[in-house]
Length: 421
Image 1 (cartoon, rainbow, N blue to C red):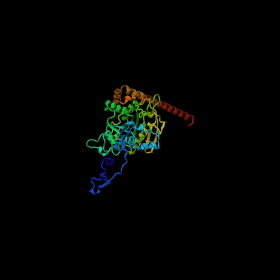
Image 2 (cartoon, rainbow, N blue to C red; image 1 turned 120 degrees about the vertical axis):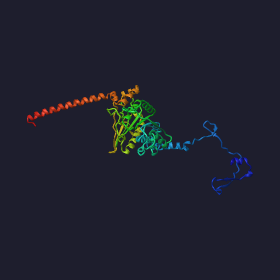
Image 3 (cartoon, rainbow, N blue to C red; image 1 turned 90 degrees about the horizontal axis):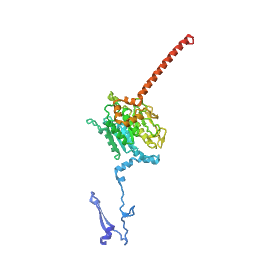
Image 4 (cartoon, rainbow, N blue to C red; image 1 turned 180 degrees about the vertical axis):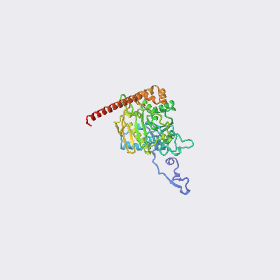
């Protein structure tokens, strides 16, 4: 209007302006009569302003963070965490949590729950590893699956891929991928070196590994690889009304590390699925146990990340979020849990120096021997000799008890002869 006022004849003023409302009845439109008062001879013009380089130019504003729905969703997802840091825990390091690359071995009940909790804590890189398909019994217990993932004809979607897609549907900005892979296991003749190499590469690419599988032997190789590569590993295992959450120890120099999942065992893992009926192959557990255990596993990870030593920290240390237990054993029937802590076992079948050395020096030959026979691990770590020594001690104890009983009987007969009994 100002431009028109300067360069047009004064005879045309005032100007009629039609305010046409498209799509509305004609009578709803308006006609306004507009006029501009006489201006001073020196008009003030607004144009380019100086930028940071002290030169005239346009000023640009990036409104993507305020208008892009994906950006808004991503920033809003962390609102609870930012409020937590602002109001309750000022020293909480959210950046280190967000930067973690998490590998979830198992995309079942535990895998789904752990993934949801990781995303809630701000983790933006999650990889699922599983070789199963979604069945009709899964969606009610496994929160990342729905009825649409089950297909009786095709056998259902692959769990790892379906879980990754579901996580992206929850938060589109997350880096979530699914890898269909069978984890090689001791005593399983079908195990292949190629899968072992793929698993090694996956663990090497990530910062944290969650062992969430449903058998003991499937946790062995990931434990070995994490021990060799010094990766933080967290195991979660379920019983009917019990659960175990454990962080595997990491070594630093000559300091003795905490034990791994296999340090309290004196036998090598075998094929626990062989000669089992279908009902025996399924994990039977109270529905709430998996949610409790998975939540504790993620909370344990977050607490460990707040410590300056990370996974090397002992079980007596504390952080801004509280204590750092080595393991948590829960009992739902009593609604209690205990916090046992153990150091690594020098003859452990997974994290002992001899196992780490054998895996590092000749991976193919070592794994081939383990896949053929689990007794190889017992011979390698010296557990076989330990069993023999234990049997010898039991025989000696038995002989001592026999001698003791014979002496007692002779003494008793002597006492009877003397009339003392």
